[in-house]
Length: 380
Ligand code: ADP
Ligand code: MG
Image 1 (tube, rainbow, N blue to C red):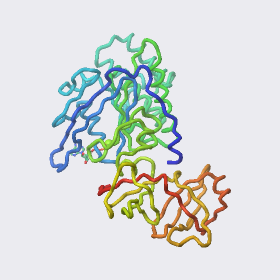
Image 2: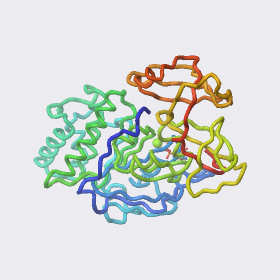
Image 3: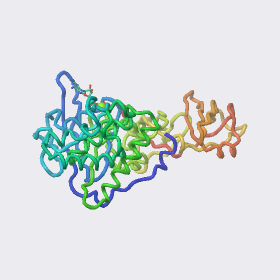
Image 4: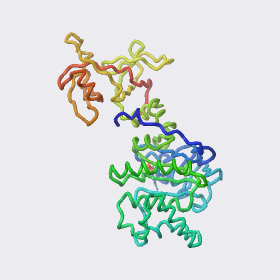
């Protein structure tokens, strides 16, 4: 991701108080699985916010949503929805709305009837259903599409119908499992913006309840752009939890540093009290006194590396070679070959490249002072 550090932060709104959802010590082991799919997971979400479960495939995200929805039963732990103990409630009584990656609309029903489905099941009077469906069609920006069938809609429109159907039952919590995953890049982007806008409007409109959302994604850019809070998952456990910027700027482990932000990974050891990664010596974290020879992992984001042209007399051991310059639109992706044979990807603005005057094949010095160093034996 380019320039993720500049992603604007959306602060939780005033409505973001009170109980949305909390889970405590949630654990789920499937028959035959030797490790727990979800392993002691705890977090809570304030009302009116968007929280994202972000993690690689298989890290337990969908299982957490299914446990919250009541589609699976936990081996241990509690689920509290809107301040009400929900762990043993039936799915219908939990007050959750669910949107999956695939639209799962009823193909033989019109958009109106799809949206009205949950209200009909709950025996809401028809006049009231009509009024609510009209409101929902407007909310998902599909007024006028009520009489179409799902097959007559685009992917993005169908997914908005799925949102409206999930919202129709006025859920205490909206659970979204990779809801934009099947859509092409542009539609995904506009649907993300719609969801953020929808949240903001609901949070501020008088007389309507704010929406509380738990979103699952493996796309870190989506998480950064949409979320008030990100819960990073790895192998069934919470790796880190916090505001998107905090996770980006202060990753708690090598796993988080490598998963969020597309950092370069450099391995090395402690030499003379400093982290030596490749040909670079970088200060160790303040307060740490690592043992000589200890293993280190260094992470540096492509836009945190500073380059200077190497003088002819610069020792070969510290000089990197510019292997490739790729123009990526607003920035240039520079691939460096390091003296130890490794590569380092650097992103610079077009103007910076011009000012440096570097071309492919040039010898440069790289300043890694922005690197984040983890000392110790981490498995990543
Ligand atoms: P994610 O959504 O993060 O990709 P999942 O929650 O789907 O991850 O899966 C977490 C782990 O649990 C995976 O190892 C997966 O294979 C396993 N798992 C999920 N559902 C089942 C199931 N019904 N039976 C057995 N194993 C399952
Ligand atoms: Mg999943």
